[in-house]
Image 1 (cartoon, rainbow, N blue to C red):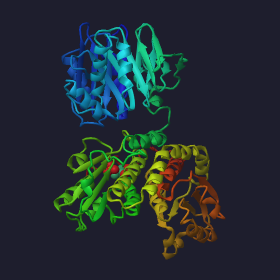
Image 2 (cartoon, rainbow, N blue to C red; image 1 turned 90 degrees about the vertical axis):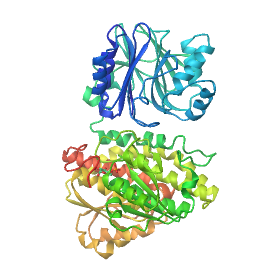
Image 3 (cartoon, protein in one colour; image 1 turned 90 degrees about the horizontal axis):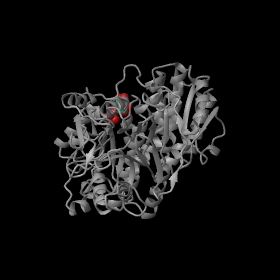
Image 4 (spheres, rainbow, N blue to C red; image 1 turned 120 degrees about the vertical axis):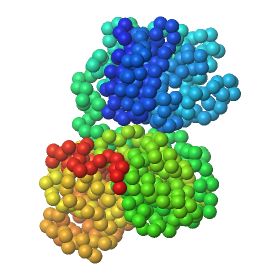
Length: 609
Ligand code: G6P
């Protein structure tokens, strides 16, 4: 995700901003930029690519001044490019703005501002902010704070914003709503940052802004007010952890940090797309993409493939279109029956996986329409697809996918609802129920994650095993595959997944005394059948870890351990269950002392075939 840093004081702002941005590099970004008040105007430098490109530009043409804002961008609206990178400015250069988050209503605002004569120079949602502030400034008699307040009340979405105004060189304004922002306190200097590491080498005293708060910052002081103008008194927080831990938000590994980020990632992916009062908005994808489509092929690799398996059930159940899911590496060589009546959905976190890309190209050559679901704006998959839906998981650093997988599930559920609404294949009442529950999913994932301590305790009982088996039926089978993959990837324990009904056709021969079996039973329509499978392995001495919810647990008479996840609609259970399996894999690997974020032999993005 994007990173923000801001400075006001007596030192060289550009140096402090670049040093701060360096500390945010771990977050991943595609461009970076700064704006500095140089005594006469707000000067901006921005460069595509690594921070060193910006540093080189600054070494050739330095910016001097004691107040500035900086940003590392991870594209969401508009391709990675210099013009789309931050800071963005108003037309006359009076205001410079850095922004994290998403302005949902930027389309309407852009149109309204364009009608008032504004000329936009980027494709970003962010650019509406400086133009809007400028508009209110002109209409508010040149009052910086009032102009900012007037502008932000018209913004919907999530934002952390840093703003400089050429007419007020001694003032930096920061605003927060649903996107983190802190103020760092120094002597004769103050800072803003989206993340603690950006300013940790300068100060350890910080103020955390809350949603709807505005901070007016000078070198000598900070005043925080709520949107209604009421002053806010905030205690100073002293940061005690070191820079390395700070990059991981105090977590020991990126993987566990990313597991914890899932409620936010899912909420971000739903935001602006799903509401109870309107059909699902599938970004720029028009209902025509479904015209005359008689089948869907989903292609993906790894965790994305597992998300595709869930997608098959969701789409078939709601949109009643036949769906096949294939590993991209198999699809390409299977002479697929793809034609102009096929919609191919390619799912890829990175958007660069070689096999998925090749599968997409093949599908296009066969006349299919190709829809991409990806986490990386401007990735090759995104560029080559006929339509693209972005997940907003933010950069995923741990090799083992967690939050990206969760957001892929959300994307595919949204697509299923979108298609069902377009084609009118499911009753509005049923879709309403599903939509309401989807809006509740971030909360349910939080509840699942709250069982972390129990899962960590359970991991101590099983981490020395050499083999584990995952069982499930229906969607529980799909999520079991993802749980088993996580375990393999980071703990190197041999693990396999079987559909409950297949057990007696071979795998049951592997069950011995104390063999660990993870039985996923979250679907109340299938838990009776799962109970029979669980009995079959218990009879042979298995140590059964049951993953169930309040609706299914009572159906199970015997198990060795239980992980309880929140109940949800049977169709959505993967979303509430998967975090528990991710946590289990994480703690098993942690007990074994492995390099969790960089497991052996694996790569985050597989760009070779
Ligand atoms: C690699 C990663 C997996 C990922 C898979 C597909 O194997 O380690 O976590 O699921 O690639 O990647 P993609 O970027 O296409 O989703």
